[in-house]
Amino acid sequence: MPESNHLISRLKTASFGREGEVFAYLQDGREVTFGALFEGAAKAAGALVSMGLSPGDRVAVQVEKTMESIQLYLGTVMAGGIFLPLNTAYTVSELDYFLGDAKPRVVVCDPQKSDPIRAIARDATVVTLDRKGQGSFSEIVSSCVPLEPLPRDADDLAAILYTSGTTGRSKGAMLSHNNLASNSEMLRDYWQFTQDDVLIHALPIFHTHGLFVATNVALLAGASIVFLPKFDADAILEAMPKATALMGVPTFYTRLLDDTRLTKERAANMRLFISGSAPLLVDTHEKWEERTGHRILERYGMTETNMSTSNPYDGDRRAGTVGFPLPGVEAKIMLDGKELETGETGVLWVRGANVFKGYWKMPEKTAEELMEDGWFITGDLARIDADGYVTIVGREKDLVITGGFNVYPKEVESLIDDMGGVKESAVIGVPHKDFGEGVVAVVVTEQQGTTVEAIAAKLETELAKFKQPKRIVIVDALPRNTMGKVQKKALRETYANLFA
Image 1 (tube, rainbow, N blue to C red):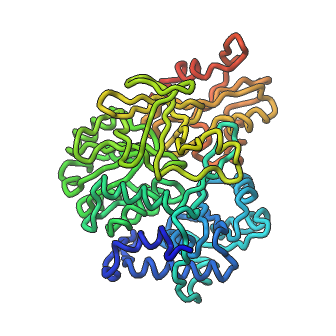
Image 2 (image 1 turned 180 degrees about the vertical axis):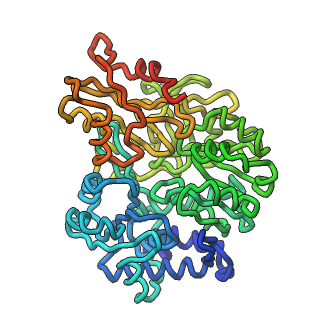
Protein backbone atom coordinates (compact mmCIF):
# COMPACT_ATOMS: atom_id res chain seq x y z
CA MET A 1 0.00 0.00 0.00
CA PRO A 2 1.53 3.37 -1.01
CA GLU A 3 2.21 5.79 1.81
CA SER A 4 1.65 8.94 -0.25
CA ASN A 5 0.39 10.23 -3.57
CA HIS A 6 3.50 9.76 -5.71
CA LEU A 7 3.06 12.71 -8.10
CA ILE A 8 1.38 15.21 -5.78
CA SER A 9 3.89 14.72 -2.96
CA ARG A 10 6.66 15.65 -5.41
CA LEU A 11 4.85 18.62 -6.93
CA LYS A 12 4.29 20.10 -3.44
CA THR A 13 7.81 19.58 -2.07
CA ALA A 14 9.43 22.71 -3.55
CA SER A 15 6.82 25.01 -2.01
CA PHE A 16 6.91 23.64 1.56
CA GLY A 17 7.38 26.62 3.89
CA ARG A 18 6.69 29.01 1.00
CA GLU A 19 2.90 28.73 0.92
CA GLY A 20 2.48 32.52 1.02
CA GLU A 21 4.73 33.15 -1.98
CA VAL A 22 3.31 33.77 -5.46
CA PHE A 23 2.97 30.85 -7.84
CA ALA A 24 0.93 32.51 -10.60
CA TYR A 25 0.55 36.07 -11.83
CA LEU A 26 -2.79 36.25 -13.65
CA GLN A 27 -3.59 38.54 -16.56
CA ASP A 28 -6.28 40.41 -14.58
CA GLY A 29 -3.71 41.44 -11.97
CA ARG A 30 -4.58 38.80 -9.36
CA GLU A 31 -1.89 36.64 -7.77
CA VAL A 32 -2.26 33.02 -6.68
CA THR A 33 0.05 31.74 -3.92
CA PHE A 34 1.35 28.19 -3.69
CA GLY A 35 -0.84 27.71 -0.61
CA ALA A 36 -3.98 28.89 -2.42
CA LEU A 37 -3.16 26.74 -5.44
CA PHE A 38 -2.94 23.52 -3.46
CA GLU A 39 -5.83 24.38 -1.13
CA GLY A 40 -8.06 24.93 -4.17
CA ALA A 41 -6.80 21.67 -5.68
CA ALA A 42 -7.59 19.79 -2.45
CA LYS A 43 -11.13 21.25 -2.44
CA ALA A 44 -11.52 20.22 -6.10
CA ALA A 45 -10.45 16.71 -5.05
CA GLY A 46 -13.12 16.76 -2.34
CA ALA A 47 -15.72 17.85 -4.90
CA LEU A 48 -14.81 15.00 -7.25
CA VAL A 49 -15.04 12.44 -4.45
CA SER A 50 -18.43 13.87 -3.47
CA MET A 51 -19.56 13.17 -7.04
CA GLY A 52 -18.65 9.51 -6.70
CA LEU A 53 -15.11 9.50 -8.06
CA SER A 54 -13.07 6.50 -6.90
CA PRO A 55 -9.34 5.85 -7.45
CA GLY A 56 -8.80 4.81 -11.06
CA ASP A 57 -11.89 6.61 -12.39
CA ARG A 58 -11.45 9.02 -15.28
CA VAL A 59 -12.22 12.75 -15.24
CA ALA A 60 -12.72 14.08 -18.78
CA VAL A 61 -12.10 17.82 -19.09
CA GLN A 62 -12.82 20.18 -22.00
CA VAL A 63 -12.59 23.70 -20.59
CA GLU A 64 -10.76 26.95 -21.20
CA LYS A 65 -7.39 27.54 -19.55
CA THR A 66 -7.85 28.99 -16.07
CA MET A 67 -6.20 28.58 -12.69
CA GLU A 68 -9.29 26.59 -11.68
CA SER A 69 -8.60 24.11 -14.50
CA ILE A 70 -5.04 23.68 -13.22
CA GLN A 71 -6.50 22.99 -9.77
CA LEU A 72 -8.89 20.51 -11.36
CA TYR A 73 -5.90 18.61 -12.83
CA LEU A 74 -4.11 18.55 -9.47
CA GLY A 75 -7.34 17.72 -7.63
CA THR A 76 -8.05 14.77 -9.93
CA VAL A 77 -4.62 13.31 -9.15
CA MET A 78 -5.08 14.04 -5.42
CA ALA A 79 -8.37 12.10 -5.49
CA GLY A 80 -6.67 9.13 -7.14
CA GLY A 81 -8.40 9.79 -10.45
CA ILE A 82 -7.06 9.74 -14.00
CA PHE A 83 -7.03 13.14 -15.72
CA LEU A 84 -8.27 13.17 -19.32
CA PRO A 85 -7.73 16.59 -20.96
CA LEU A 86 -9.49 17.20 -24.28
CA ASN A 87 -8.69 19.86 -26.88
CA THR A 88 -11.13 22.76 -26.57
CA ALA A 89 -11.50 22.79 -30.37
CA TYR A 90 -13.01 19.28 -30.53
CA THR A 91 -16.60 19.22 -31.73
CA VAL A 92 -19.32 17.29 -29.90
CA SER A 93 -19.21 14.57 -32.57
CA GLU A 94 -15.47 14.18 -31.94
CA LEU A 95 -16.03 14.08 -28.16
CA ASP A 96 -18.49 11.22 -28.54
CA TYR A 97 -15.68 8.77 -29.30
CA PHE A 98 -13.48 9.87 -26.39
CA LEU A 99 -16.27 9.69 -23.82
CA GLY A 100 -17.44 6.33 -25.13
CA ASP A 101 -13.92 4.92 -25.04
CA ALA A 102 -12.72 6.31 -21.69
CA LYS A 103 -16.05 6.01 -19.86
CA PRO A 104 -15.29 8.84 -17.42
CA ARG A 105 -17.02 9.11 -14.04
CA VAL A 106 -17.07 12.93 -14.31
CA VAL A 107 -17.06 15.25 -17.33
CA VAL A 108 -16.19 18.94 -16.84
CA CYS A 109 -17.06 21.16 -19.79
CA ASP A 110 -17.91 24.70 -20.85
CA PRO A 111 -21.46 25.70 -19.88
CA GLN A 112 -22.30 26.42 -23.54
CA LYS A 113 -21.61 22.78 -24.45
CA SER A 114 -23.19 21.14 -21.42
CA ASP A 115 -26.50 20.12 -23.03
CA PRO A 116 -25.07 18.33 -26.10
CA ILE A 117 -22.34 16.76 -23.94
CA ARG A 118 -24.89 15.45 -21.45
CA ALA A 119 -26.58 13.71 -24.39
CA ILE A 120 -23.39 11.72 -25.14
CA ALA A 121 -21.91 11.42 -21.63
CA ARG A 122 -23.58 8.05 -20.87
CA ASP A 123 -23.43 7.47 -17.10
CA ALA A 124 -20.99 10.31 -16.31
CA THR A 125 -21.81 13.27 -14.07
CA VAL A 126 -21.51 16.44 -16.17
CA VAL A 127 -20.50 19.72 -14.49
CA THR A 128 -19.35 23.05 -15.92
CA LEU A 129 -16.44 25.48 -15.67
CA ASP A 130 -16.26 28.62 -17.81
CA ARG A 131 -13.40 30.85 -18.93
CA LYS A 132 -13.73 32.85 -15.69
CA GLY A 133 -13.40 29.73 -13.55
CA GLN A 134 -17.11 29.80 -12.68
CA GLY A 135 -19.77 27.13 -13.17
CA SER A 136 -21.54 24.28 -11.45
CA PHE A 137 -18.23 22.60 -10.62
CA SER A 138 -16.85 25.69 -8.87
CA GLU A 139 -20.11 25.93 -6.87
CA ILE A 140 -19.61 22.38 -5.60
CA VAL A 141 -15.94 23.10 -4.84
CA SER A 142 -16.84 26.17 -2.75
CA SER A 143 -18.81 24.04 -0.30
CA CYS A 144 -16.22 21.24 0.01
CA VAL A 145 -13.53 20.78 2.62
CA PRO A 146 -10.00 20.12 1.36
CA LEU A 147 -9.22 16.44 0.78
CA GLU A 148 -5.87 14.99 1.81
CA PRO A 149 -4.22 13.42 -1.27
CA LEU A 150 -5.17 9.76 -1.53
CA PRO A 151 -2.27 7.26 -1.63
CA ARG A 152 -1.15 6.34 -5.16
CA ASP A 153 1.86 4.32 -6.31
CA ALA A 154 4.45 5.32 -8.90
CA ASP A 155 2.89 2.91 -11.42
CA ASP A 156 -0.71 4.05 -10.89
CA LEU A 157 -2.16 6.02 -13.78
CA ALA A 158 -2.31 9.81 -13.45
CA ALA A 159 -3.53 10.72 -16.93
CA ILE A 160 -4.75 9.47 -20.29
CA LEU A 161 -4.01 11.66 -23.30
CA TYR A 162 -5.53 10.77 -26.64
CA THR A 163 -3.31 10.74 -29.71
CA SER A 164 -4.85 9.89 -33.06
CA GLY A 165 -3.81 6.89 -35.12
CA THR A 166 -3.07 7.16 -38.83
CA THR A 167 -6.23 5.13 -39.47
CA GLY A 168 -8.19 7.88 -37.73
CA ARG A 169 -8.97 5.99 -34.52
CA SER A 170 -7.60 7.82 -31.50
CA LYS A 171 -5.43 6.00 -28.96
CA GLY A 172 -5.42 6.83 -25.26
CA ALA A 173 -1.83 6.98 -24.00
CA MET A 174 -1.75 5.86 -20.35
CA LEU A 175 0.70 7.94 -18.28
CA SER A 176 1.68 6.93 -14.75
CA HIS A 177 2.57 9.05 -11.73
CA ASN A 178 6.20 8.12 -12.27
CA ASN A 179 6.12 8.84 -16.03
CA LEU A 180 5.14 12.43 -15.24
CA ALA A 181 7.15 13.00 -12.05
CA SER A 182 10.43 11.51 -13.24
CA ASN A 183 10.38 13.29 -16.59
CA SER A 184 9.58 16.71 -15.13
CA GLU A 185 12.16 16.34 -12.34
CA MET A 186 14.79 15.54 -14.92
CA LEU A 187 13.77 18.50 -17.13
CA ARG A 188 13.85 20.82 -14.11
CA ASP A 189 17.47 19.84 -13.49
CA TYR A 190 18.53 19.68 -17.16
CA TRP A 191 17.11 23.12 -17.95
CA GLN A 192 18.26 24.47 -14.54
CA PHE A 193 14.91 25.74 -13.25
CA THR A 194 14.93 27.08 -9.67
CA GLN A 195 12.60 29.03 -7.39
CA ASP A 196 14.13 32.22 -8.81
CA ASP A 197 12.57 31.55 -12.23
CA VAL A 198 9.46 33.19 -13.67
CA LEU A 199 8.08 31.17 -16.58
CA ILE A 200 5.77 32.73 -19.17
CA HIS A 201 3.04 30.08 -19.47
CA ALA A 202 1.11 30.73 -22.69
CA LEU A 203 0.63 27.13 -23.85
CA PRO A 204 -2.69 25.26 -23.83
CA ILE A 205 -3.15 22.76 -21.00
CA PHE A 206 -4.92 19.96 -22.92
CA HIS A 207 -1.51 19.03 -24.32
CA THR A 208 1.61 17.40 -22.82
CA HIS A 209 3.72 20.51 -23.41
CA GLY A 210 1.62 22.99 -21.44
CA LEU A 211 0.17 20.70 -18.79
CA PHE A 212 2.96 18.30 -17.92
CA VAL A 213 6.13 20.11 -19.03
CA ALA A 214 5.43 23.78 -18.26
CA THR A 215 3.18 23.35 -15.21
CA ASN A 216 4.92 20.39 -13.57
CA VAL A 217 8.45 21.73 -14.12
CA ALA A 218 7.50 25.09 -12.56
CA LEU A 219 5.92 23.40 -9.53
CA LEU A 220 8.83 21.00 -9.05
CA ALA A 221 11.25 23.93 -9.10
CA GLY A 222 9.10 26.14 -6.89
CA ALA A 223 9.17 28.67 -9.73
CA SER A 224 6.52 31.29 -10.49
CA ILE A 225 4.56 31.59 -13.71
CA VAL A 226 2.98 34.41 -15.71
CA PHE A 227 -0.28 32.62 -16.50
CA LEU A 228 -1.76 33.60 -19.87
CA PRO A 229 -5.02 32.05 -21.17
CA LYS A 230 -3.50 31.73 -24.66
CA PHE A 231 -0.73 33.07 -26.89
CA ASP A 232 -0.80 36.85 -26.69
CA ALA A 233 2.18 38.67 -28.21
CA ASP A 234 1.43 41.88 -26.30
CA ALA A 235 1.24 40.07 -22.94
CA ILE A 236 4.37 37.98 -23.60
CA LEU A 237 6.42 41.02 -24.62
CA GLU A 238 5.14 42.93 -21.60
CA ALA A 239 6.11 40.03 -19.29
CA MET A 240 9.62 39.48 -20.68
CA PRO A 241 11.47 42.13 -18.63
CA LYS A 242 10.36 40.49 -15.36
CA ALA A 243 10.38 36.86 -16.55
CA THR A 244 13.24 34.41 -17.08
CA ALA A 245 11.87 31.67 -19.37
CA LEU A 246 9.35 30.98 -22.13
CA MET A 247 8.12 27.62 -23.38
CA GLY A 248 6.46 27.73 -26.77
CA VAL A 249 5.85 26.17 -30.16
CA PRO A 250 7.50 27.49 -33.35
CA THR A 251 4.41 29.60 -34.08
CA PHE A 252 5.10 31.64 -30.91
CA TYR A 253 8.55 32.54 -32.13
CA THR A 254 7.61 33.37 -35.73
CA ARG A 255 4.84 35.67 -34.53
CA LEU A 256 7.03 37.39 -31.95
CA LEU A 257 9.68 37.95 -34.64
CA ASP A 258 7.05 39.87 -36.63
CA ASP A 259 6.81 42.39 -33.75
CA THR A 260 9.33 45.26 -33.77
CA ARG A 261 9.17 45.44 -29.96
CA LEU A 262 11.17 42.21 -29.72
CA THR A 263 14.70 43.44 -29.00
CA LYS A 264 17.83 42.43 -27.11
CA GLU A 265 16.91 44.96 -24.43
CA ARG A 266 13.44 43.51 -23.92
CA ALA A 267 14.83 39.96 -23.68
CA ALA A 268 17.75 40.94 -21.42
CA ASN A 269 16.28 39.40 -18.25
CA MET A 270 15.35 36.13 -19.98
CA ARG A 271 17.67 33.15 -19.61
CA LEU A 272 15.87 30.48 -21.66
CA PHE A 273 13.58 30.13 -24.67
CA ILE A 274 12.36 26.58 -25.29
CA SER A 275 10.59 25.32 -28.41
CA GLY A 276 8.91 22.02 -29.15
CA SER A 277 5.78 20.18 -30.37
CA ALA A 278 6.70 20.89 -34.01
CA PRO A 279 9.91 21.38 -36.04
CA LEU A 280 11.59 24.77 -35.67
CA LEU A 281 12.92 26.13 -38.94
CA VAL A 282 16.64 26.92 -39.01
CA ASP A 283 15.70 30.37 -40.36
CA THR A 284 13.58 31.07 -37.26
CA HIS A 285 16.43 29.88 -35.01
CA GLU A 286 18.91 32.22 -36.68
CA LYS A 287 16.61 35.24 -36.78
CA TRP A 288 15.75 34.80 -33.07
CA GLU A 289 19.41 34.80 -32.07
CA GLU A 290 20.09 37.86 -34.20
CA ARG A 291 17.17 39.81 -32.68
CA THR A 292 17.45 38.74 -29.03
CA GLY A 293 20.95 37.42 -28.49
CA HIS A 294 19.46 34.09 -27.32
CA ARG A 295 19.62 30.70 -29.02
CA ILE A 296 16.32 28.85 -28.77
CA LEU A 297 16.60 25.46 -27.05
CA GLU A 298 14.71 22.89 -29.14
CA ARG A 299 13.59 19.60 -27.66
CA TYR A 300 11.59 16.55 -28.80
CA GLY A 301 8.82 14.57 -27.20
CA MET A 302 5.56 12.77 -27.81
CA THR A 303 2.32 12.25 -25.94
CA GLU A 304 3.47 8.69 -25.23
CA THR A 305 6.91 9.64 -23.90
CA ASN A 306 6.77 13.20 -22.56
CA MET A 307 10.24 14.60 -23.39
CA SER A 308 12.90 12.28 -24.82
CA THR A 309 15.63 14.56 -26.20
CA SER A 310 16.81 18.14 -25.72
CA ASN A 311 19.52 20.43 -26.94
CA PRO A 312 21.90 21.19 -24.06
CA TYR A 313 21.41 24.05 -21.62
CA ASP A 314 25.18 24.55 -21.54
CA GLY A 315 26.69 23.71 -24.89
CA ASP A 316 25.97 23.93 -28.59
CA ARG A 317 22.25 24.24 -29.34
CA ARG A 318 22.28 23.09 -32.95
CA ALA A 319 19.58 24.47 -35.21
CA GLY A 320 17.74 21.74 -37.06
CA THR A 321 18.38 19.13 -34.37
CA VAL A 322 16.50 18.16 -31.21
CA GLY A 323 19.67 17.58 -29.21
CA PHE A 324 20.69 14.55 -27.17
CA PRO A 325 18.69 11.81 -25.46
CA LEU A 326 17.89 13.19 -22.00
CA PRO A 327 19.53 11.69 -18.89
CA GLY A 328 17.92 8.32 -18.21
CA VAL A 329 16.55 8.05 -21.76
CA GLU A 330 18.03 5.70 -24.36
CA ALA A 331 17.58 6.20 -28.10
CA LYS A 332 18.45 4.14 -31.15
CA ILE A 333 17.72 4.15 -34.87
CA MET A 334 16.15 0.97 -36.24
CA LEU A 335 15.24 -0.34 -39.69
CA ASP A 336 13.90 -3.79 -40.56
CA GLY A 337 14.74 -5.13 -37.10
CA LYS A 338 18.36 -3.96 -37.14
CA GLU A 339 20.03 -1.07 -35.31
CA LEU A 340 21.60 1.36 -37.78
CA GLU A 341 25.00 2.96 -37.73
CA THR A 342 25.75 6.58 -36.84
CA GLY A 343 24.35 9.00 -39.40
CA GLU A 344 21.95 6.55 -41.02
CA THR A 345 18.24 7.32 -41.22
CA GLY A 346 15.64 4.97 -39.79
CA VAL A 347 12.88 4.85 -37.18
CA LEU A 348 13.63 6.36 -33.76
CA TRP A 349 13.09 4.05 -30.77
CA VAL A 350 13.31 5.34 -27.17
CA ARG A 351 13.35 3.75 -23.72
CA GLY A 352 13.22 5.18 -20.19
CA ALA A 353 11.05 5.99 -17.18
CA ASN A 354 9.32 8.58 -19.36
CA VAL A 355 7.75 5.98 -21.67
CA PHE A 356 4.01 5.43 -21.18
CA LYS A 357 2.28 2.26 -19.95
CA GLY A 358 0.46 1.46 -23.19
CA TYR A 359 -2.73 2.40 -25.01
CA TRP A 360 -6.03 2.37 -23.12
CA LYS A 361 -8.01 -0.77 -24.00
CA MET A 362 -5.76 -1.47 -27.04
CA PRO A 363 -3.46 -4.37 -26.09
CA GLU A 364 -2.73 -5.28 -29.72
CA LYS A 365 -1.72 -1.73 -30.65
CA THR A 366 0.36 -1.51 -27.45
CA ALA A 367 2.18 -4.74 -28.36
CA GLU A 368 2.94 -3.37 -31.85
CA GLU A 369 4.58 -0.17 -30.60
CA LEU A 370 5.80 -0.84 -27.05
CA MET A 371 8.26 -3.72 -26.80
CA GLU A 372 8.37 -6.04 -23.78
CA ASP A 373 11.86 -4.78 -22.92
CA GLY A 374 10.58 -1.17 -22.72
CA TRP A 375 11.56 0.20 -26.14
CA PHE A 376 8.90 2.40 -27.77
CA ILE A 377 8.73 2.74 -31.56
CA THR A 378 8.07 6.45 -32.10
CA GLY A 379 7.24 6.20 -35.80
CA ASP A 380 9.45 9.22 -36.49
CA LEU A 381 12.26 8.95 -39.01
CA ALA A 382 15.51 10.25 -37.55
CA ARG A 383 19.27 9.99 -37.50
CA ILE A 384 21.89 10.40 -34.77
CA ASP A 385 25.15 12.05 -35.80
CA ALA A 386 28.68 11.34 -34.61
CA ASP A 387 28.32 13.89 -31.80
CA GLY A 388 25.11 12.29 -30.53
CA TYR A 389 22.66 14.94 -31.78
CA VAL A 390 19.29 13.61 -32.91
CA THR A 391 17.69 15.04 -36.07
CA ILE A 392 14.07 14.27 -36.91
CA VAL A 393 13.87 14.03 -40.70
CA GLY A 394 10.26 13.05 -41.26
CA ARG A 395 7.49 10.74 -40.17
CA GLU A 396 7.06 7.12 -40.99
CA LYS A 397 3.35 7.71 -41.39
CA ASP A 398 1.57 10.71 -42.83
CA LEU A 399 1.11 12.65 -39.60
CA VAL A 400 0.94 16.43 -40.04
CA ILE A 401 2.03 18.64 -37.12
CA THR A 402 0.56 22.11 -37.45
CA GLY A 403 1.07 24.72 -34.73
CA GLY A 404 2.09 21.94 -32.35
CA PHE A 405 -1.08 19.87 -32.90
CA ASN A 406 -1.29 16.47 -34.58
CA VAL A 407 -3.50 16.06 -37.64
CA TYR A 408 -3.99 12.61 -39.12
CA PRO A 409 -4.83 12.86 -42.84
CA LYS A 410 -7.07 9.80 -42.92
CA GLU A 411 -9.62 11.47 -40.62
CA VAL A 412 -9.87 14.55 -42.86
CA GLU A 413 -9.81 12.51 -46.08
CA SER A 414 -12.69 10.32 -44.89
CA LEU A 415 -14.90 13.36 -44.32
CA ILE A 416 -14.04 14.89 -47.71
CA ASP A 417 -14.46 11.60 -49.59
CA ASP A 418 -17.94 11.15 -48.09
CA MET A 419 -19.14 14.43 -49.59
CA GLY A 420 -21.37 14.35 -52.63
CA GLY A 421 -19.50 15.31 -55.78
CA VAL A 422 -16.08 14.26 -54.44
CA LYS A 423 -14.26 11.36 -56.07
CA GLU A 424 -11.23 11.17 -53.77
CA SER A 425 -8.81 13.27 -51.75
CA ALA A 426 -5.33 13.29 -50.30
CA VAL A 427 -4.41 15.39 -47.27
CA ILE A 428 -0.78 16.40 -46.77
CA GLY A 429 1.35 18.78 -44.73
CA VAL A 430 3.65 21.28 -46.43
CA PRO A 431 6.04 23.87 -44.96
CA HIS A 432 4.33 26.86 -43.37
CA LYS A 433 6.26 29.77 -41.84
CA ASP A 434 3.83 30.29 -38.96
CA PHE A 435 2.58 26.79 -38.16
CA GLY A 436 5.55 24.58 -39.12
CA GLU A 437 3.28 22.67 -41.48
CA GLY A 438 0.03 23.72 -43.10
CA VAL A 439 -2.72 21.20 -43.80
CA VAL A 440 -3.52 20.97 -47.53
CA ALA A 441 -6.33 18.93 -49.09
CA VAL A 442 -5.87 17.90 -52.71
CA VAL A 443 -9.29 16.90 -54.06
CA VAL A 444 -10.57 15.21 -57.21
CA THR A 445 -14.22 16.11 -57.89
CA GLU A 446 -16.83 14.29 -59.96
CA GLN A 447 -18.85 17.34 -60.92
CA GLN A 448 -18.17 21.03 -61.48
CA GLY A 449 -20.57 22.19 -58.78
CA THR A 450 -18.32 20.89 -55.99
CA THR A 451 -16.35 23.96 -54.93
CA VAL A 452 -13.53 24.71 -52.53
CA GLU A 453 -15.98 26.83 -50.53
CA ALA A 454 -18.49 23.99 -50.21
CA ILE A 455 -15.83 21.54 -49.00
CA ALA A 456 -14.45 24.06 -46.49
CA ALA A 457 -17.95 24.85 -45.17
CA LYS A 458 -18.66 21.16 -44.57
CA LEU A 459 -15.36 20.61 -42.72
CA GLU A 460 -15.99 23.63 -40.47
CA THR A 461 -18.88 21.80 -38.81
CA GLU A 462 -17.12 18.44 -38.50
CA LEU A 463 -13.54 19.20 -37.46
CA ALA A 464 -11.59 21.19 -34.90
CA LYS A 465 -10.17 24.31 -36.52
CA PHE A 466 -6.55 23.12 -36.38
CA LYS A 467 -7.49 20.06 -38.47
CA GLN A 468 -9.23 22.08 -41.20
CA PRO A 469 -7.14 22.49 -44.38
CA LYS A 470 -5.52 25.89 -44.73
CA ARG A 471 -5.74 25.39 -48.49
CA ILE A 472 -7.96 23.15 -50.64
CA VAL A 473 -6.76 22.43 -54.18
CA ILE A 474 -9.00 20.81 -56.81
CA VAL A 475 -7.16 18.68 -59.39
CA ASP A 476 -8.05 16.29 -62.22
CA ALA A 477 -6.25 13.27 -60.72
CA LEU A 478 -3.94 12.22 -57.89
CA PRO A 479 -0.46 10.87 -58.68
CA ARG A 480 -0.18 7.07 -58.25
CA ASN A 481 2.50 4.42 -58.48
CA THR A 482 2.24 1.21 -60.51
CA MET A 483 0.43 -0.46 -57.60
CA GLY A 484 -2.21 2.26 -57.62
CA LYS A 485 -1.12 3.86 -54.34
CA VAL A 486 -1.43 7.63 -54.08
CA GLN A 487 2.04 9.21 -54.02
CA LYS A 488 1.88 11.73 -51.21
CA LYS A 489 5.59 12.39 -51.49
CA ALA A 490 5.00 13.71 -55.01
CA LEU A 491 2.14 15.88 -53.77
CA ARG A 492 4.30 17.33 -50.98
CA GLU A 493 6.95 18.19 -53.58
CA THR A 494 4.39 19.75 -55.93
CA TYR A 495 2.90 21.99 -53.23
CA ALA A 496 6.04 22.55 -51.15
CA ASN A 497 5.97 26.31 -51.83
CA LEU A 498 2.22 26.81 -51.52
CA PHE A 499 2.62 28.95 -48.38
CA ALA A 500 5.96 30.50 -49.29
